[in-house]
Length: 307
Length: 315
Image 1 (cartoon, each protein chain N blue to C red):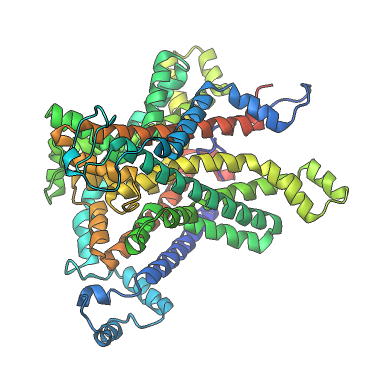
Image 2: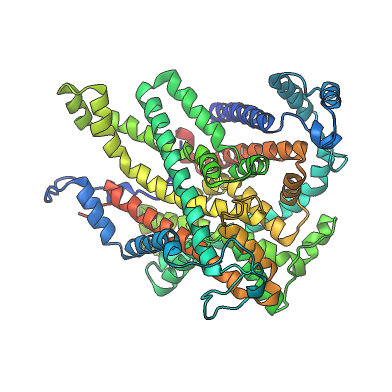
């Protein structure tokens, strides 16, 4: 409807599209995308940060054993020092170990939600795009309707009623994250349907499933991966917000937002180690996902590709 | 133009109806009836059934939905059994405060993001552009409550410039005049919004800078200041209209968290307290209002864009 640069996808100036006639070495799209991505230093840094947090949160607890389950009144509110690199909480828990556990839960929810969302959304969008007609209109109006529901409110109400666990939060949030992929994949399918290589495959006798498996999915994969990256970032913020408000993951599962809200309560005492490390973790993970997402979007987007 | 407007308004009404059905159905599944909360944990099944019958909660959900919708159109949003007040009265008490907090932050963030984005585009890849981009990226990744905590630590606890609690006055005019306590909540929401807006503003301004009318304006000898003021600002700001319209869900969420952190008695805090109280009618009313605001926000943005940019009318 609008013919201005899309605020969601960023400016895709037509002027930057190749004008034709440039003949470069023939390379597969994926290899080009990887090369483009690798040349973006910030994105590689973002990827490194994500890798670090995966190791920190999933392998860390195996190597570093800090108290996160049993209250110990002898070790409450200790500042960072020997034995407790990041200090302890008012329950005598080890902050570093809590950070690992909390990050594990946050990443699990985020990846579950994003994966669930993208699978559901791709199927929904692909069916709408392939079938077309009235079915398509109805399916996409349903997406419009769900997109208008403020997610934080609904997730809060569900979390209050049923309690939050990694699985339930992942599914609830994922139950919202299929909407944007559905739109993206439908758009992709609609444009792909008319492309010459798809017609060529059809003329060559490829069946419907071969078309979907060999041509549509690999081509739509780019947008989907980008979407997953942004949704992971989004979900981590959402889970943290739930935890901060007191409706997040429950003990013994740890929650970064919950840790931050408890830390905030003791901020007047000057217990900085209960606030800033966990805040920094959230910011770093989300920032890294956003950087990687931006770079992936650029590298998958043929129109922006440098030749 | 008018055909487009009518079509757009009709689709919005359909979407609002669809949203209200989905939300009502969802909440009906979660809380079929507030009877237990009203009558207490010791209420017998018989008394719960009697209460449900008396208040119409034994009817099929679609009938309940239609009567809710009918009442809502007459301004009756149900009764808060926890606060012993009608939901409409509760919302009426508080909406102006939330509107002030969100509206002021929105206004400030647009007023900051537009010049900031243009400045970045004009000085692109300079040290200052990179510094602003970095700051925007970090703020964009920052949870609202963490930013609020940092601002409270610096400006309230360390420097004692502002208050860590928002104004508790019930008069909106008082609240508006109370800079000591309102600066931090407004600054929190503004900074978060600016982080999102300035990135788009920068790229939109860069696109506009490459257009022919800018070259023409420069070629006819117009001073650079006027090129930017007369030609660039208006064209580059167009995407902001859509962006602001699309950001209503983010504003609502930010509003909820900010009001909770600063204990500001607005709609967000009402919703938060209702979660703790399981105050069903408040939860459903505010969720529905939030969804309606999202749809209306998109509609207004689309209409505003057709007014601001005559090229769109052709589409």
